[in-house]
Image (cartoon, rainbow, N blue to C red; front, side):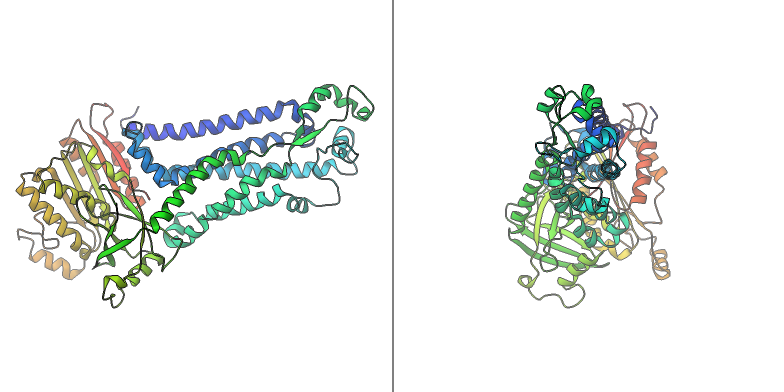
Length: 568
């Protein structure tokens, strides 16, 4: 095994391979059953192999539709995270990849959906061919069944004088199948990264078409287009023996007319559990949304950042967690995730919100950041809060060495962690398990440092007083400045405190050399398990993931970097 391949990635690969193996097993097992099952012998005469293709993909669709809601059930994920006895180490970190698994399952639904739809298009054409005037032999005999009394039909197309499109729109299965396909296309296309980043509200609203998707899925099989021979008929009519005697079925005692029935719909059985679980999730959210949230403080920061302090009855949090916020005056449906920037020791909880879309811009405007702020807190717009929920950053204190990396507003998740460290130092408490934390913040705008620099300064002072200055090593990188700032920085470079942040640690200008940084950390902690936590853009995430693989030792007793990215 190469040195760059970590245990965490082994588990990720195991999860993906397990999911893929179950899909392959379900597909092949169902395909073989429908290709050989005697009850569907006459059905295969009309449809051929597309029967097995349609049914095998349908089972895989049901399986993936069962899974699709589980990764986005936030309370369920938080419950699993809390069950440390069954979710430890690399397995626990897989819960932080819930959205990746959600997307993987969505691709599985799309892939099997295409197979299922194409197979049924061929099935409809074959049903039409069975009713054609030039149809003959066993195919014609089977298609004409159901015209006489006491006969049940096998071919759902009863006349040749209709088109495939009309037949599709005249059945429950056809209509619901069309609705499912359209809903899936809309959901998938609106989930692209470009749409999510630029038009989040569009993504949010269209994603809720999943309700129509699941309702249609539950009743899709009610049409029972695919029919097979009944168990009673199989006892009286042996298809292997009687298939060549189709002209004598009415008269032959050994080969009575075969009887057929549609297969019981089963999609609802697969989806019922997860749908009920997700419904409970939304009921909990509805209940929480009606709990009173008191806004105690509003602070406007540079770079269009809004800080909100709030209180809520029985609200309990842990460092690194996040909440969902709804502002009914903006939208009664939209909930947006924000990491908590307060510490559990504080008597309030807070978030920092940067304007980065229609909803956040409307929220900042509602709180007066684009004009005159409301004079009293009671005149502020009402907010609803759901959560808190666990995230990957909650595991920072579980490693002996942690490396925390943030870009821009991505620093907010780490504010809660650093505040918690400050309170533990203030109360002379130890940090069980954590012996060293490296903190990196890369930011373009010097003004954005203001609100966070105060926290670092306070933490720096408190840890020095407690003799714990060695516990935290922080590095701040400024990637954007103008000529006046550069002159000001150069003139005050020799001062004891940094001219930008006011901290003892000097600000670096430019971007970090991650090879040098990881090499030094690996050298400082040669036999440690190091957690790397990141909140920021995807491009840098890939770079950091590569660094974790590159500098992890092939020897399990050597240094191991475990990558964790904050996901919502």
